[in-house]
Structure formats: C-alpha cells, structure tokens
Amino acid sequence: MTTGHVNVKAMLKLFTAKQFFDWQAYYQLEPFGGERDDLNAANVAQVVANVNRGKNQRPYTLDDMRLKWEQERPERTSEQLFAMLKLIAAAHANDEPGRKVEDL
Image (cartoon, rainbow, N blue to C red):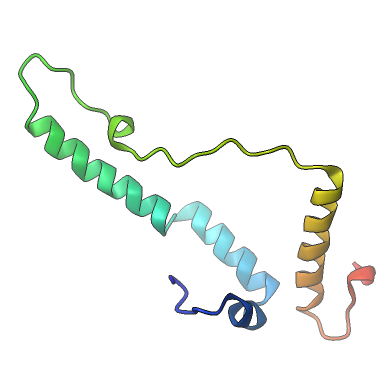
C-alpha cells in the first residue's frame, strides 16, 4: 500500500482524523495512486499512438487512451449519510482524549 501499512485497522488506529483530512487535502492538490498512474500511462500511450498514426488519421486524445473505471454512484439514503457523518464525528472525537461523539 502507499502508506506502507498492510493492516487497515492498525493504520486507522495510528492516524488521527486531522492527519486523514490533511492527506485528503493534499490529494486534492497533488493526486497520487492508481488513478494518477492510469492517467500517466494514458499520456505515454497517447504520445506513442500519435507518433505512429497515419498521415490522414485524427490525433488521439488523452481521453481515447484513458481507462474508464468510473461507475455510476448509487443514491444514498439519509440514514446512510447520517451513518457516514457519525463515523467522521467519531474520528474527530478520537483526536481529543475524553471527548465523546455526543459532545460534537
């Protein structure tokens, strides 16, 4: 894994919520991981395809080479969204000893 941890549960015990959100913010600025690797591979494939294309053939675009992994996201119920918020609140509560989710 990118973080060097193979046990997700152990990793989550070591990471604070602040660290997790900091990594999310960093990812927004400098994406990393599989999605970025796919984009880099598509860029190389585009260049190779374009230098080898026929004279009258249209140039390939990055989108022509990009892997299409996206799937449509299912609608989430209000109960599912509330459960997600409770998990986030619990992660924040763990950042401060003695603080409980109900205090947030």
